[in-house]
Image 1 (tube, rainbow, N blue to C red):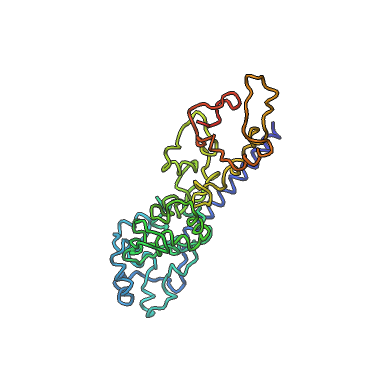
Image 2: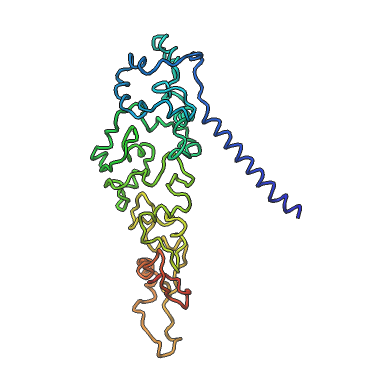
Length: 348
């Protein structure tokens, strides 16, 4: 019994300890914003002082949600400054030096994690709750990699066509480019997939990347907007396959992407491969598709003709879709082929 406990409890304990250390380390990194030494003892001067030199930026920023936030709204997050200085730090030294850039904080020139820490001061819940553990954060991306903070209004969301993609209107999020163009700057392989003959209607403007993905991170990779099974996200639109069924197809209940490529595919119905090759990755080839029955061994009352010569049986199998017979591949409540398959063959 003692040996058993040592075998299992020690590794589990070490794993938990490591996870806690990583979590604490990440949390500390998120909270660290290092102000330049030249900003020591600097004091807040207000956004009006900034506007005297940065009039072009402040003109647009005056209509921005960040400029309209009251001091008491950010005080709950521990932020004591407001306006420009909430992100750039106190500006008295910057003003006194005549605009010395080393005496003010520029989020665009900080490391990704440190720059994001400024935004996380206020945006620490909701959509951005999982940012610290997201793939984008781990790649040292910053909020300003995708968002522009000083914008007046995201005019790009109203453009009809972007690189041949019809625009879906989305809420103003201060993006540097509209979706999906912004995402495609890094995810070029996905751009290609959305141009395949079969694809989700991203190009037609009915979907954008953020309809399925949360770019700020989730607990389900790859940053899907679902908390448990991946298939739940797909079934939120494709509700006709929701079930529960008396006879289920395991991949449907687990993960639709086992069989489908959601961004696009050459095969019909977004399948990763054409039938029967996709099905043969899990299922064996049926006996009746590769061998001709020995009718001589059957009683005369059961004699029948297949109409397919035995030397062409394999050719027929490889040029036939499995769903020609197993049409209810996503699941069914009706039993089929009860004797060989216990009713689970999904043919009706």
